[in-house]
Length: 193
Image 1 (spheres, rainbow, N blue to C red):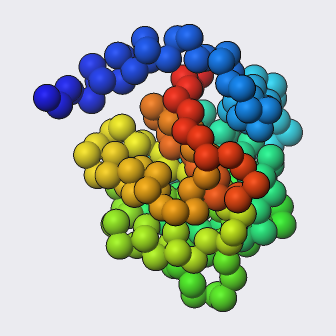
Image 2: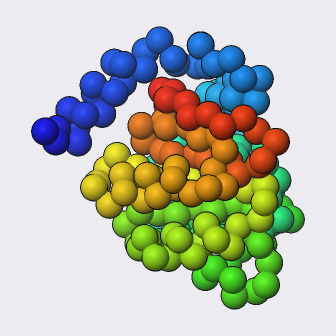
């Protein structure tokens, strides 16, 4: 039986209370990501200026701020953007890693993306499959809105089923996965602030 999306989010939130802010995470990598990146409450240097450029944003500001922190932590050289990512979101990513180059089509510039941001509303399963196949061996995959629609859930399951996916985080709102072979095979369900 499928639950309405709003009820499903509330039930997931209740189920994750014991796993908020990194409690119960045994992996040092997972604990550091959740406590020092995802749940970071500090003011980053670029928040003020970027907050004034929010016109045309497709993601809420807290999501763009999370992307800035993820890019700052991971430091990708090339990021693949799928699904009609707004210019302001690109600006947040650029503020997180100023050396990062961006593209919107898998395999067009010959570089293997080290970060993939795919918005479910404008990403097909075929495009996501092409993007996953083009990723660098050590990559970060971010899917906002994994519980907002059936299509978002389908894309998230596609990421989890990909053979290169090693460690993944289900934040109810977002799905984050890493393809680094040095990481342990694990899937974490954690609350998002």
